[in-house]
Length: 280
Image 1 (cartoon, rainbow, N blue to C red):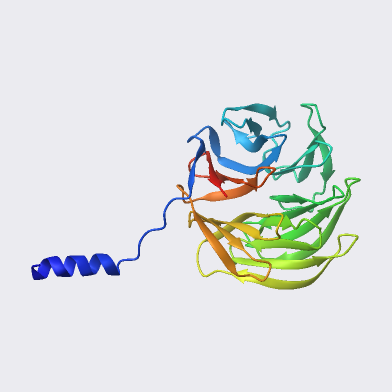
Image 2: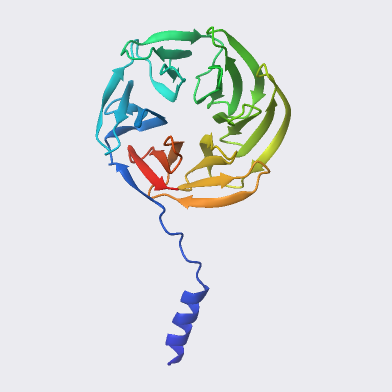
């Protein structure tokens, strides 16, 4: 080979290979707005906020066909979504400091919990009892709070003066709670007692770059974290070790959820207004 050919081959071999894309489109670009968030599954149907326009919730069947589920009243805009075992849907309404509720088998929207001291409830995680945990960031001040919303709709402030709280997730047996701070790029782990009180706060994992957004815990106790700006989802052990990196088509994932068998992971993509899916 000529020298310049050898140099070119050497340079190629020394260049790190880009990660292969692990996802494919489930819902195409701009079907949802850039506010797409809060994916959650119920009865083989995927739900997410801001379908076609802000202040709505859309649903997507298992073939990827989208339609309007409900339009939120009073200029409310949803973020996190969760269903309970009875089929009631809960919505973090960051505009009006609410947790909204759509009772099972209805399209009616009601206020389940309200607290004017909430900044803007963002993501929510539901426990076996039906109680919720809600992150509550103040983006302008890079601070945040953590709330518990009890089954009677009462609210309890669990922690204030945190970083920019965003993703929140509870494990299957409701013994661990995970909360991340987007700007500070850290995930915290708490112990939960039988009454869902938090204790023993510990750093699970911290990152040097890119933001953090929604999280979920699978049936094996592994934490899945969306890396906003990095175009990745990480699978992290309860000990804080990165077990796997999933590369997305887009760069700005906002949240994720699993199908009921946990064979698929659905990821909402902000800049695309789309939803990607990964076969697990």
